[in-house]
Length: 255
Image 1 (tube, rainbow, N blue to C red):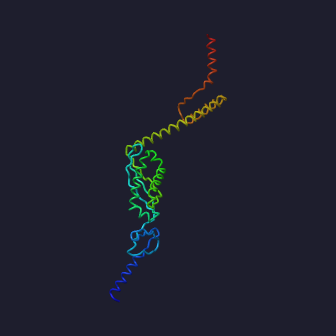
Image 2: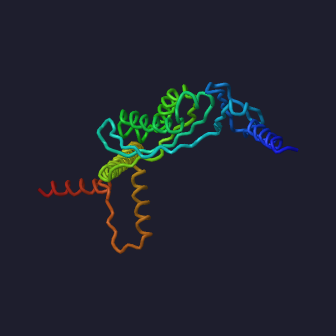
Image 3: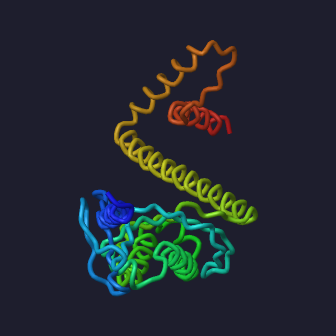
């Protein structure tokens, strides 16, 4: 075997090795032939033309991208810091390579600007209470802008809203006032229901005056069980009225 033949064999082996490409189940290989897009191949083994073809691997797995904290001024002029997390995946590898220079960087920048824009249109109360609606709106807008890049945004979640200290104190005072208002309303409702019950009881006693005497005796029995040395007990005027009338008659007779 001549040296030139051995070199030729080595070159053929190198060319054959460079022509064989393997991609994993979650990968696709975007093929360019002399600078022109051919197709996206994979997964598994396939062949390309050495020197002529160039392959770029693209992952199709879902990517969780952290959106760094953004300074946002809400619609009611409250300055806050908000961060979020973005879940997306490549569904068209050819577009992800051809239509945008760096789809990861482009998606990150788009999510940051969209987060500031959308949250700046919301008031602080709606931002804290209507989180699901805002997340859905963010997802729809970002997905619409990344669709030409072959990217599908599946979920956007606002993670944390960092409020200024003075705003936290104001919200704490507001929450405390709200709890006090609810307590007073519940107490007033209880008093109202109790007054209605007492009114019904008074109507029953008015129809049966003897029931009032029984109630007095029951109250006296309850007080006596508490081992009190002094008992102050109200006396019904109906019991002493006959005595008062007799005393009045005697007084008139003396006159």
